[in-house]
Amino acid sequence: MFRKLREIRILPRWIIVLIDAFFVLIATSFAYILRYNFDLSAIDRTNYGWGIAGFVGLTILASLVTRSYSGIVRYTGFQDGIRVTYTLGMAAIIAASVNYMYFLQHGIALFPNSVNLIAFFISMVALLAYRLMVKMIFEFFKGRKHRFKRVLIFGAGESGQMVNQLFTNDPVFKVVGYVEDDPNKIGKVVNGLHIYDGSKLSTIFQELQIDELIISVQNLDYARKNNLVELALQEGKKVLHVPPVNKWVKGELSTRQIKEINIEDLLGRDAINLNNYYISNEVKGKTILITGAAGSIGSEIVRQLVSYQPKRLLLFDQSETGMFHVRHELTNLHVNSIEINYIVGDVTNADRVNYVFSNYKPEIVFHAAAYKHVPMMEVNATEAVICNIMGTRMVAEAAAKNKVDKFIYISTDKAVNPTNVMGASKRIGEMFIQSLNNIADKGAFASTKFITTRFGNVLGSNGSVIPLFKQQIAMGGPVTVTHPDITRYFMTIPEACQLVLEAAAMGKGGEIFIFDMGDAVKIVDLAERMITLSGFEPHTEIEIDFIGLREGEKLYEELLNDKENCINTHHNKIMIAKVIEHPFLKINVAVDEIIALANRQAEYDMVRRMKDLVPEYISNESKFGKLDANKTAM
Image (tube, rainbow, N blue to C red):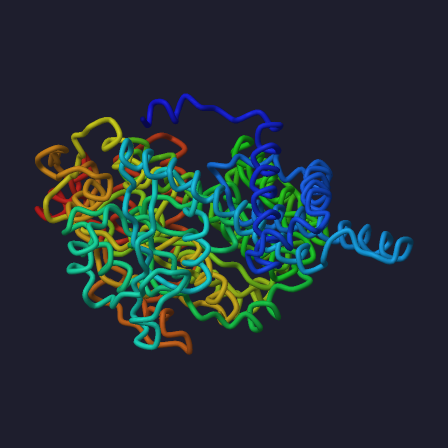
């Protein structure tokens, strides 16, 4: 039977008009019977034939005007009901008008006005009823052929109700209820759906035979979100979520935007409370330079700065492709009130750097340009030094000479007790920036405030572990993890950049700000959870291979070394590291020597000098490890 129904395409419009006319004919006839209390002899003494024909004819005419026949009957919805009501109402009003004019001319009515009113209501019920009946028949047989996915919506608020409306006519999903944590909502009914108790989720999954859970709550805290996902995965249920309102297409939600939850949605943390007024006062109306502006961190700093209305943004990066994409994005954001300059250049090119400072006169600098990938820099050590140390010194000295107000250096937790060239280069960058601030205080340079921010891995950054795991899972595995015990701190890119702006606003010069990164995450746990979220069984359907630590890699990262401690600030996620400060002349001479060795490609001598300057730098899984052995032997 379903095959026959499926073979029926869309009926010709004239057939819909005839069916409507037939039901109106029956409805009008019954209206006469009701009006005259089933007295057929009384009906026979009226002009019932003209009355019935007139109302049917006027309905057909109104139908052609309003196009009430144009809807596909098996997909009847609210708008179709409005259109039918409007059509019948138009026919009834015209019929009443004609009846009134006939009465004025002949002193007698063509038909009782009560018949017109009764016919209108019966016709409306009949036309809507037969449309809904056809829809139910199609859905019944379609449901028998293709089973709906039974969906439970977490959150009975506005967002959850929108999800329910989206799935009303969806051939795949069937919403069977809401679930809530709010005791004031539990037990009530919304849109004909019961609201269940969120604390009994596992039981609800079984009783309602749920296939998928959709999280619709916009500001759900991460702990509860993780708990919901964990419960659903334990029961073998898929979890989807509604994106934030600001990501809805043209302000409207569509079913295509409701996607499976991913690991980034679970590793983030609750929203950070920023002192937006303080940040705005710091950057509004100023010219700001961002190096590495096409990178993960730099581009996000740009996005966030836009909302604070700086006078001009100077975007500096050596990647022309990256700059093209940033420019395209900002153009679509219509930030016409801010002057934006897209400058392609290398921070190690002194002439280019000095030109930017002397020509554009930036007042604040965010220095995010750096080489950051540990294994790659371990085998290209001189390039790490030239970019991360020489480039940093060039930009910082240009900032001081050109009387920049604040210089914010973006560092990393890999600078703490470094085990690789990249981390050591960033630590030397920190030492140079802090020593430069000390002589700025003494008047050797203009009073530029040099500030450092230090944080861990950011989710979704270029080359991070999560995109790699996603790719490996999509290919069927295996997922490669370096070591069973390796851990990392994670933070979302927007969160990290928000804290950078806050630290920049509160910095007085010379500080190394460190961020509360939360708890460290075991990478193997991360891999297992990503595999589960993708619908596979870890270690069974998707294997996890341990491949050993890479060059320069260590098991865990730290935000402070053994000789450092920290003090709190007014922001509960930002602290100031109390580190050993070094005199500028000593650091400057050492940096000169390290850069000279890098330019001569003297890798081992260069790394040896770096280890002298940073005694806690002990190589791990690296060819430079023998330098530590020689030092120990001495």
